[in-house]
Length: 135
Image (cartoon, rainbow, N blue to C red; front, top):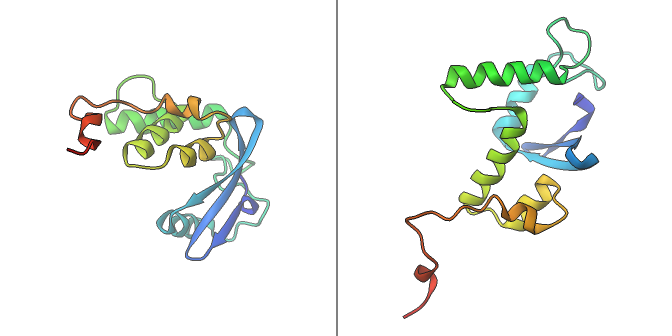
């Protein structure tokens, strides 16, 4: 991801990414995330990577990102197989759990079918569809 892939949208921002499924998608960033990104930009140019390698030559490669994520997960006390892709699944599950419309999550993740996104819907033992029926 290069700085040219980020665009300001009012007090927030948007990033255009090319990713899973060979698809390009636009992801809206919160105002807080946008401010944090702008704070780290410094004098970086449009073609510079947003997250440069430690040596300062180019962007982080996949193995570097995986190491960073695994170290952060260990510091946070997370167990199991944590990976950059795990964040994609976590995003979908948490967004749906917090009431995001399934079609919006589908679009954000780039799923061609809502059935694929539906795999992230989880029934909770404390909830029941009967709560939605009128008496």
